[in-house]
Length: 486
Image 1 (tube, rainbow, N blue to C red):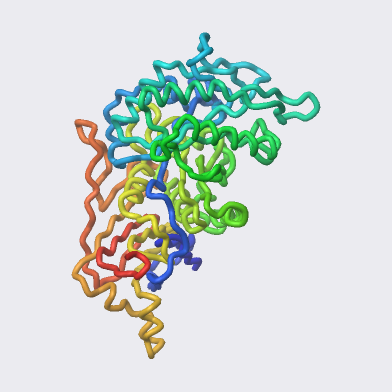
Image 2 (image 1 turned 180 degrees about the horizontal axis):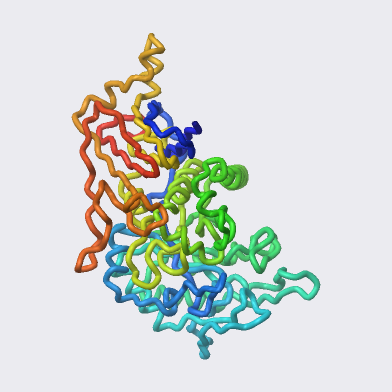
């Protein structure tokens, strides 16, 4: 059995076939935190991809791109409002091909397919009236906005080195865009400079020294246009967050994806990426935080038979736990809507299973990551084994004189009558289905397109936590008094 504690707390139980109930004891160290996330840790993206974006002989974006999305859909509005301040990144692969229809920009074309161009599309434009519509939508739904800026404007691809873009960044269009945004009173929480332009890049890259100098130009421009520090987008330092992407399950047409997503040893491999980013940030700029600014498990739109299903939660919630353990402040899910990997169905806007688990994480998990702590998530990858879990504290174990007492649930977790549990399971046991049950209740929007209530199950605190096969369980201990939580 491979039992792993990741977050405050994530437990991954290995994919084993024993067909009986196993007993597990989890020890919580409440006096020490291992990391701390942003209060808006669970985030999502909205992407620029147009309807014509296709992969694997399918075109899964529909009208979910930023320029086409129907912002009046009630279920979309309610899905965002349920988070009570969801952080959304406006960006994606095409962000370095977007000009803003302000200032000297008079011609504002749509993206068009163009062979030989970056990502196969021409330059596109964000019309000012669409920017107004988006911001009215963000204000209505309480969104915190991260905006991905075009960092290639003014540059050209090198004639001698494919993928390398050279020349100076033309910041005028970004300046005009920011001035208009400020004039209209729109709030931008943070700016991302370009899309995967560092290192080897993704389609395009900029030399590190040039990129760093342009980040300083951007920061100075932000400070100039926002003289009051209280109204500035994130960051007193030049760099507030160091971003990277996670697509650790490969391509969306991989027929082995459903197997990978249930294999803890495969899921564990990406830990080296999180660890590496954490070490780099901690070494060179400890005041900054590591951000996962895009993550969709399988790239090029996701996998249509896995990404929107219950099984995807085995990957998603493991990633949230792993990222938080390695002190990542923010985790953006690609996408809120659009592609196969969205939290909401691209056509119907109805939430997919991961949406409800993400909402529970946002509501239940605190920003302090213990080893582990007050809210707990268990992920059981076994298809036929149940686990009965008892809890004890590290401090209690140290006080025990008899080793045999350590495995017993101690007073700190049984002194109250009940704990709160949320059991997420697939409808009919079909993990590749798109209906999730929370405490046996199907999660389906109401007739008025409201997000259904997710009520906890109150369980006798003296009994073990039962984690059924192929299930995800949240547990909240309301009166756990860990010194670090005070």
